Image (spheres, rainbow, N blue to C red):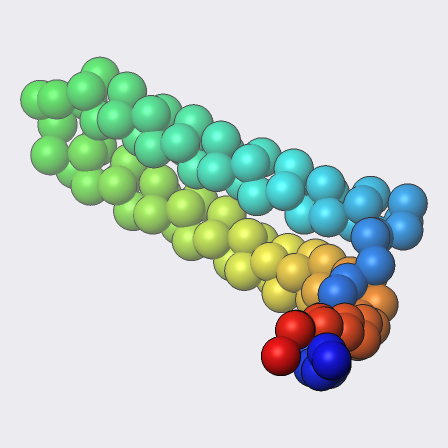
Length: 105
C-alpha cells in the first residue's frame, strides 16, 4: 500500500514581451547611469590636474563636479524607483502547483 503526500510549490510564469522590455530597459538605464558617473569622475580628475597650481580653480571644479554628480545621483534615484517599480509590476504571475508524492509503506 502507498500513501500520498500533498506538497504545494510556488511557480512563476515567464515574463511577457513587455515585461522583458521593461526589465532590460531597467538594466540598461543602470548601466548607462553608472557609465555617466564614471565619466564625470574622470572629467573632474582631469580638470583638477590641469588646474594644479590654482587652489581657487580646483575648488571651483570640485564644487561644480559635486553639483553634476548630485544631479546624476538624483536622476538615478528617480529612474531606479520608477523603472524598478515597473520591473516588479511586470513579473510573471505567481501560481501554486500541487505535487503529489507517493511513498511506499
